[in-house]
Every structure is written in C-alpha cells, then in structure tokens.
Length: 442
Image (tube, rainbow, N blue to C red; front, side):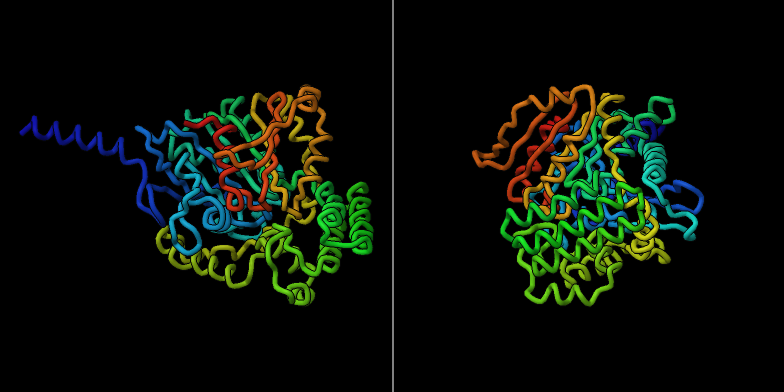
C-alpha cells in the first residue's frame, strides 16, 4: 500500500509539472488573471501557451502584445482582430502567433479592456506611470509563473504602444538590473508606432498627395492644420496640440472624402464622411485611436463577444464591463498624447543591450511610414552611422516580395508591403518573417 501511495504521489507530481495551463476561450492551454499594480488599480493579462510542436513550451519565447489608444484592449483587438488563435467569429486563425510562441496580452493602461480602476484617482496620466504599472504587472505575472523568468521575453506593440513599449522596456530593464525582478528580457519591437506623433501628422499630407487620394488644394489645407499642430508641439502646448491633431484629422477626412486611416486602400462607405461630421471632435478622436474606427457592426460584435461569452468563460467579475473605462483612460492622457519618446528609444539603444525594432505597413496613414522613417532619422545613438550605411534588403517569403529590412547595431527597421496599421492581420507572411528573424525562435 505504501508503494502504491508513493507511486500515485510521483504520478501526481508529474501531472502537476506538465499541467501548466487550463482550458479557456479558444484552442490550447491558457491562463489569465489580475495583478493589483497599485491599490485601486487592477491590470488584466491573458496568456496563451504556444501550440508549437515542442517538448516544452519553454523552448519558445514569451511575447507581450500591447495595443494602442491609449485605452484600446489587447485582449480584444489584438487578440481577436489580429493575432490570437481565433478570430472575431470564433474560427481558428491560421497565422496566429500562438502556433510559434507563448503570447501574453495585457490590457494596458489600467482602464483598458478588462483592466479597471476603483475610482478616477487611480488612472495613469503619463507614459512613465504607464511603464511603472507594467513593471508591477510583470512582477505579479512572474510570481504566478516563475517558470517564465528564464524564457526569452520580447515586447511587441502597435500604434500608441509605440510610446508605451519603449519606456516599459527601459524600466523593466532597469528594474532587472537593480535586482527587483528576474526576467530574460531580450527586445522591444514597435509596430506602426506613434513614437513621434508630430512626425506622423506631418507625413499625412505628402503621403495622401503622392497616393492620389487628395489634390493640391486638399494637401494645402491638411498641411496648414498639420503645421499649426507642429507649432503647438514646439511650444509644448500639449492639450492644445492634441485638439489641433483632431482638427488636422478633420481636414484629412474632408479632403479625402473619408479615407480609412488604418489602410488607405480599404473600401469605405460613400457616406462615411457625412456620418463622421455628425460626431463631436472628441468622439472622432476616440473612435480613431481607441476603437480603431472599425465599422459599427464589427465594433458591436467585438463588444458583445468580450462582454458575453469571453467574460463568462474567463470568470470576469460582474462589476467589470469590457471597455467601459476606455474613454476615460484616453481622456486622462490628452496632456501626454502628442509628446514624443525618441529620447527613450535613444536610451534603449545606447544604455541597454536590448534589441530594438520597428515595423511599418506601407498603406497605414495614421502612423504613415514616411513619418516613421523621419523620426528614426532623428535618433542620435552611437551606432547611428552603422545603421545609415547598412544596405536595405528584401524580405522574401516563398519567393514573394513581402517587404524590406535594414539593420545596424541593435536596431532593425522592417517595411511591410500590402499592409496597413494592423500589419499582423494584413500581411501575416511578412510579420511571420519579422517574428522569426527578430526573436530567433525555433
């Protein structure tokens, strides 16, 4: 009997060692939960263990995905619209990142998605506060999942995430150096990033003119508004520059008759612009940056999914309504919205060994590639000349030209063909190359 009990105990220990996740919404093993990053501030994460054919999930890296906004939900938009294992309609996605690596979606900053605050006093207001909350999230995550402390960690993001992710990576690196956290942080990659907002805004007019989407009169009106935005940024009048950004957006809508900000070749309704005129400036800005301006039916479908079946499956507290605090989260950051973080990227490149990457879809308007190239040219770091002298090479997947890349020092730039703002969904082949080349998995 003693031998039998001992054998059962050994089997139980083996089972516990192998059982690292639980069934969730969609295929594969998952885990999720809250970390109280501060009293009154509750941040939500959703982990998907890789379904790759490997002996252990620890053979593949852990990739964090941060959405933009600020206030957009990684567990919603990034997961179901771009790179998670199932799409908005519950169908398995062929190009999910989970097939290759472990993926951690974080609803950030607090107030986004399922993350929430007890009162308005607990929202973050600056990029630094966002990054420190994310470090606390990772402390809580590693406490629950210490097996990931040695697994290579890569931070990927999109849009406004291009402001949040660099400072998060920097603060996480410094926390690791101070011995406050154990983490195998390797890199940060910025997807269609809002890293230098004014460079993006100043690129709108030239990009649309070259594409034939506006004429010279439209270009002149856009540039008049954009240059005023630039003057306000130069004067560090941050709230006014955010408002003027909204006015520049309106000039783009008027001149283009309602072009899609996230993929200029995407079909839009002929009455789209007239419907946008009925929105207040605040509503237009919020829909563009937090709702991604997707069509109303699709937007409602995602909300119903996240507040219904997903919330029920994950056991989300009944008092938490997915996305209900997103508008407030965005509003609180209006003062920070137009501030650049080029200096943070410089510090990452010169003061840390981390690999830094940028990928940009050529059909994106909101963070247009020409603007991204312009702020990259402003970087001032020790290996700058090495990067500038490097040759740009083709990204070829299955003999198809999917884009271009250029590398120098610990910096990498990827131009993604046939892609707008949501590059992982628009061109999964090119992004698959970026993932393999940048993280070195498999």
